[in-house]
Length: 449
Image (cartoon, rainbow, N blue to C red):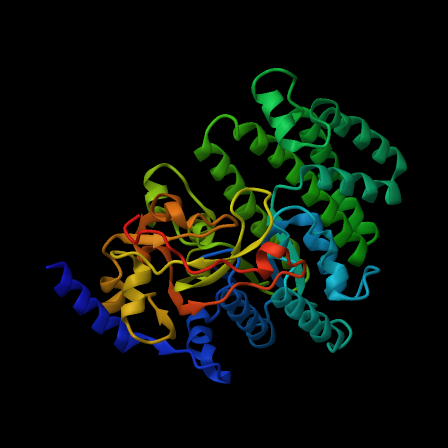
């Protein structure tokens, strides 16, 4: 029965698959699917695959030039990404994309300090520079919340330039975090959650409230650039408040911390839309993040366990105005670490497991293709049965791949379309480690693990 069902599914997928040949028109069908959507979420099946980054950059360029998208929102820290934003909009002091990406210092650097992102940032700067005066510029923003102490410093630095007395109050409030955790957010979260020290949530909330109360005055008096900079500071203050909760929740329950993080990312997207609503008609945002964040969690094993994610929240909040695009690969190489905070390595990606979507899409027999799913129909039906799906993050453990990287999902419920590359290559980091240069030898693990 399973073999017959797979055969029928393969016939349906082959008939609908749009081959990707590296031609100008590769993404025409996807642009048609996007239509008038305000949010396009572009996933990835790993945090270290060149083809995923290249495709997302190609799609992003077309969304900006053809659909009027004005914001690229990525799974990165707000202050580090905002430095890139200043560069692509012709502000700041950085002289090159590599310099603008210099804020990405913590693990995993390669996610944003890589050759594909350099090329995108370079293109965005050139695109913006060529626009006439007054035309909306495309920006680059981070939606993640790991940068608690970086955001604290950014708030204080902003206030020192516009209101020294407010900066003094902020420094006093945020001093609570340094007293309790030094400069280590996890140390703070551990001490606060276990009651070793008092939590600093009240201080974070007071600072965010003060910045929000100042927002209307800044907009009325200073407008333009000053309003953007105040928005930047306010988002940093909101990040500190949410990160405080997140780092405490890490020592309570995984579901709680995951949900806090993805809710923060979805809220940041909404904040960007509200901010740009004041500047352009119908602002549009393209999002880059992992499939696990952008594929609707309600169609996955994680959703059954109580987790939600950005994709689910965006669908609930924006409905037909959103498009969720997933990515897949069968085998190849990937840039990933063997453990947290370890050096980047160029690792071999094992072939997709039997019973997985990766194996099914491999059997289609088309090396690279775009597959529309939205609207149900035959393709939606073919991809509705639950299968295994692979997720490689910043860590890849092929020796325990089934338990470390696979989960059950219904692809037609997760995404509006999927882009499959059968054989993919590792992302090229700007800082290449010896472990990356000396790639792994062919795998020798038993295939049944």
